[in-house]
Image 1 (cartoon, helix red, strand yellow):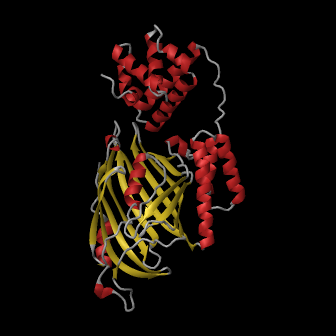
Image 2 (cartoon, one colour; image 1 turned 90 degrees about the vertical axis):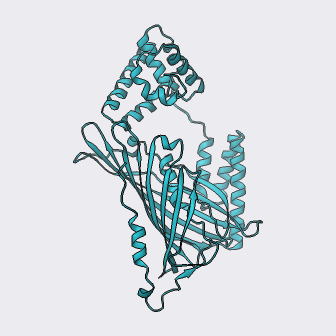
Image 3 (tube, helix red, strand yellow; image 1 turned 45 degrees about the vertical axis):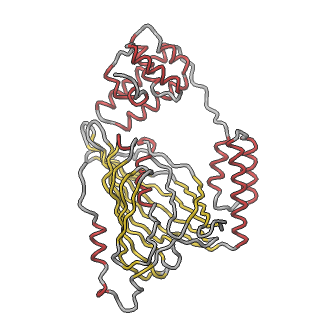
Length: 443
């Protein structure tokens, strides 16, 4: 993977701060960094991430750009532990919007949907963590694993030195366990006056590599950010960040560039009464969540509806709505009836698409085809299993390949048995679904 020069932001930071250049009346260039522990402190941030991907195809280079926003809500509630506060954090991801797709020099019109590239919308998520003056765990949108690891490395920054520090001070923090193993390097650049009062500027540079299993498919480049931290509110005012990484492919690596902006859009101090309401809301949500977890879906749905009726303007409604959706049994239409020959013909057509996509390095199409094979294996499970035992080698091999994408554990065992027994015909498919779904097989 092509590596870019050392972070421009870090170089710029050293030029921005010069004691002799500070104007009269500028805020002191030293600070004790701390997280906000005040009960009732509520913030809402808007996360905007723009992703550019460059992928080498057989006859052209494809350039995809898409954007996605998320709402990040944090609320402190008094905790019995001294020197800490319970913080509720909610992430609400919005649908991704494809901005442009270019194949070679040609703009693709109409613009394809996000689903065509496997870009999904993360489900709303609610977490509770303990925040201390020096450490504040952060949550990130539920997106693909590689992007999630990069976002964690950038957003999990609120871990501060114990003592007061001067501008120019640097410190490091080890990263491990969230998808990237490496280190974060921070530098306190300076203080500036803004509408929020004195704001500290801190640069962040991330070095490291993806951890397994991500390391098998991805290579991490670097990530860097400028953090704007309010001295008075002890909270994030703004972040501007960027990162690059690559996905390993047969033809050439797919190169990703991520730009992230975090903006503070709301800051509020809740009254004691409002804090009590938040506690009641959390207890009500926990009760509904437990009912759903125990399989009492009807009761969970009733509790969600009661929640919505009691608190129609609650900031936490997105997770309540998501919980209610999970309690509704999905009513899927009955698959069209097919004979064994019709099903085999469908598998032939699907596998031809798979092979064509593989040969032309159309990985998005190939992955969509893999998902389709999984649907076929699940919807027509009995017939696919019978085809996998057919005397005709072609039918048998096509069915085994489809079972490699099944959601059932027993199908993976059947695939392993078919490969090991030698009843597998097309060895050129081993790099496809069989290898992903049956890694333990002997080749």
